[in-house]
Structure formats: structure tokens, C-alpha cells
Image 1 (cartoon, rainbow, N blue to C red):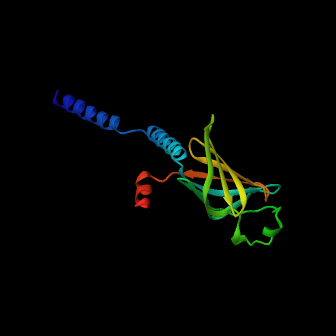
Image 2 (image 1 turned 90 degrees about the vertical axis):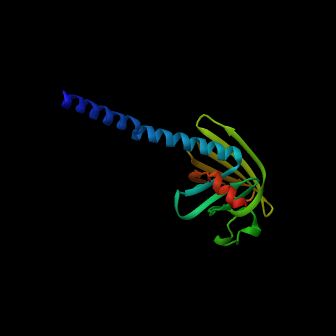
Image 3 (image 1 turned 45 degrees about the vertical axis):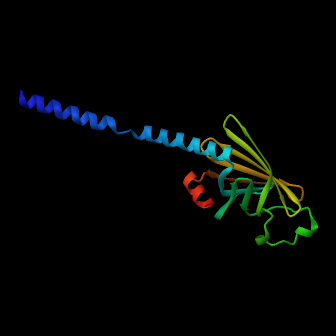
Length: 177
């Protein structure tokens, strides 16, 4: 009788311990929900970072990016450190070197429009960079994968593929102080 009650108590305690821990599936689901909320907050608060891993110049093959390229939307400004491959239609800019990329700038945004889509968000940003108006369209999935299409009057359009990262609120507050 003592052995049976001891076994029953042991079985009950082990069952309670395992029932309190979450399964991997539950943990993944919670992490995904947290990421979806972070992406939503970043898009609506105008605070997110796009990290590019490949570029698709118009009429060319996809190129992998090995360096740390990206764009950061922060409040009413955008900071871009992206390469540009393509044709330039303006004579004065055709002799520019790679280091003088038209996609490398830190400028205030002329406009920022966001809309919710079935698969995530579309964010349209307009920037005036050295007399050239650059239109950026971010297609962002709910979980943070993204494509950015950059078009301008003086150059061929170009697309970038990558991921959206949202800085945690504590990091943004520390940066502002």
C-alpha cells in the first residue's frame, strides 16, 4: 500500500512538472506571435531596420550581398547604406564611383505611407537625395521578410530582398538619451 501511494505521488508530481513546461511547438508559436507584433509596431511607429541579403538590378541576375547593407527608418528620417547597380540617365552622375552610391544617404522622408495587405504591410517612402527623388516601396510580411523596390527619375529601378528587424523599445530610448 505504501509503495502504491508513493508511486502515485511520484507519478502525479512528474506529470505536474511536465505539464507546466511548454512544448517546442508552443514556444515557436509564441515567438512567432511576438515577432509579428514587433514588426507591426515597427511599421506603425516608423522604427525598423531593413537588412538586405540580395539585390536584383533591372535586367540582370540576382546578386548576393556579402557586406552589411541595409536601410533604417527612424522617426521622420531614413538612413540608407545600399549599393546600386544599374543605368544612370543623368549625365552628371554617370561618373560617380561605387562609394558614391545614389542609395547611400541619410535624409528626412518627404512622405511615409503605410497600408495593411493580406500578407503583411506595404510602406511607401519618398526621399529627396541630391536633387533626385527616390521612391522606396517596402513589401513586408507579417513575420518580417521584406522586399524593397527603389525607383527614381534619374536611374533604373532596383529591388532588394532581406529581413526587417525592429529595435526593442529600451534600445531606442537609450539611443535618444
